Length: 268
Image (tube, rainbow, N blue to C red; front, side, top):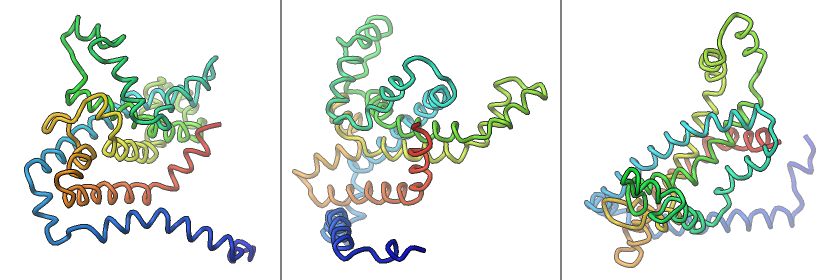
């Protein structure tokens, strides 16, 4: 192995160490300031348990929607060449880099009571998405689905298509070949993408508070509860923040290689 890779120049090592400290210091501060002795008491409060339950329900629902609609979208982007392919890919992953409050405003203009889609939903079906639990799920799906799409697109691109062609020659339909050949091959990537999407949905704040508001028991998820608790009960805010930190760290630590592989293999 090249020694330059094993022993970086001193200045490089120092700068890298400063960068690591920059990311670690805020998380370490959370752990140090956390009221560990009263953690259970804080987390067992009714309003906290309600926020936790709502967060789990909404994030899991958003993940299911991401899988349902993101899987065919990833397949199309990976397998079908059509005019505007790059534009569609960019459009469907744009919410990853948009300021969350911008995503919330865009959702309001689209699905609000006077939005271009929301007006029809209200007039025809009596469905009002803003400031509702369904609105939370919609906002979380909007920001989380791109993580699944990118992961699955990479998996579809790298899957061995000769196996599908063999299934076709044996008389399998396209759906049977997908269900029995392609889907098992990409199952690990689908699981990884779903977990990433779930973690992103669980931590969503900006789009949710803009589009769905912050109503306890209806739209107040963990991140929103943290925001509210910062003013009234900082200890509870710290413990809830640590829950999100632990979940996010575990997801990224466990799936880092698969996620990076999707980024390098899926966008080409």
